[in-house]
Amino acid sequence: MQKKRVHLVLLGILILAFLAGNLSYPKYFNQAASFLREKAHINVPDFWDIPFKLGLDLQGGTDLIYEADLSNIEIGERSQKMEQLRDTIERRVNIYGVTEPVIQIQGENRLIVELAGVKNIKEAVDMIGETPYLEFREILSEEERQKEKENIPEEQITAMIELIKEQTGRDATREEVLEMFTFNLTKSTELTGEYLKKAEVAIDPSTSEIQIKLKFDKEGSELFEKVTERNVGKPLAIFLDGMSIIDTDGDEKITANDFYAPVVQQKISGGEAVITGEMSMEKARKIAQRLNSGALPVKIGEPISQKIVGPTLGKISLEKSLFAGVCGFLVIIVFLIIFYRFPGFLASLSLGIYIALILSLFKLIPVTLTLAGIGGFILSIGMAVDANILIFSRMREELKEEKSFIVALEDGFRRSWPSIRDGNITTLIVALILFWFGTSFIKGFALTLSIGILVSMFSAIFITRNFLRAFAGTKLENIKWIWR
Image (cartoon, rainbow, N blue to C red):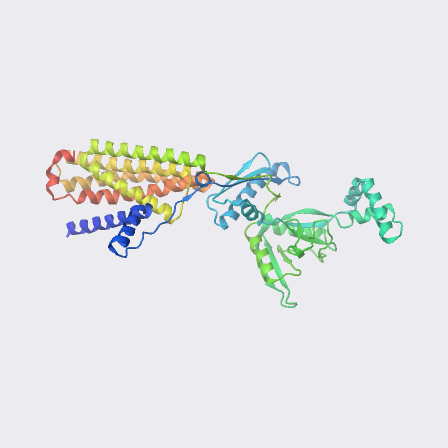
């Protein structure tokens, strides 16, 4: 019964190896299927062909550089704001299906955005631009308006007086023109989309008007209360991407210098605001979706640099890395066979299945492969080899004590398991920490290493063990030199 169970397990392993091998590299199976369809008229379907997902360094993509406007941000807070900007844009591009984007801060106010596989620069710019910048603006105080009046060039004032004379036939005073220039000027408040918790579409039950409800977090609620308190009886405008929310899709764009805003009737507590205006349900949902995807903590304009990145250098690096990996794998096989003889040969078969399983998982998950990710995968092969060596060393020790083959096998696995478990778990913990706190390529390295560690434990403990069990009770069991 035990022997039958081992044979069934081996059959399952071989089927799994066949499926994994063809999923990771279906070329030869599909060629054979095509031959059978054409020559023998046997309708054999092609194997599922899923391409590997490659990162920017291997397949090319778009490289963008943005410059953030930090003029209104305190010097001590600028680093934090840039980190928030990076995280928000990374979330945004992930929503659009761009996995493992490389988003880095350069200097004080620049952001580098690398999007693998995105070859259309306009598509990439639109993707980033869809992330809204929400702000609440209040009109200038009288003192601030006076300062603005002092900064208006004299020639601009003269030109406006002449224009009024030409169009109306009357003589406008200098003070009247200054009032016109500064009447609708607004300034940003400390309340921005950074503090937005949720946005949702609603319908006013009394007026049936479509509106967007904004809910701020705890800090945002306090700021909103302060802003409304000091602006009671005054206009307070909501702007999205520098345009009044009342007309974000119309032909006439109302900018921050255009005067249109609801008047604050009283101090508002509770951290809730309502956006109203002429908008369709579709438009309201779009705005709410954009707001929920993450409002930018600081303003960014059009990218100051944009280019398409070719994969030529990455392709060369990939070829060299794969060549080095194949050479290393062959050396490992030779080492295992020379030093561990027949168990080393079985371990080599197990490692081959392990590689097929890993590559299949990379396709199915899918994992975006970068050079760093390939490095993590190759490192995990070393972990798999290490587990096999521990098992064989313990097994040799048991055989030298003249124990039977099956007893030596089981005791060897039992004694080696604590070392294998502790070594792999500690490495896995480090990989998880790297994935949690790291960014871009570091996460790719940590992900492939983590998957590799888990599969390597399965390979050594389950596949290699059952390969060895299959020879228990056979004539090969008695040929001691191939096991020692």
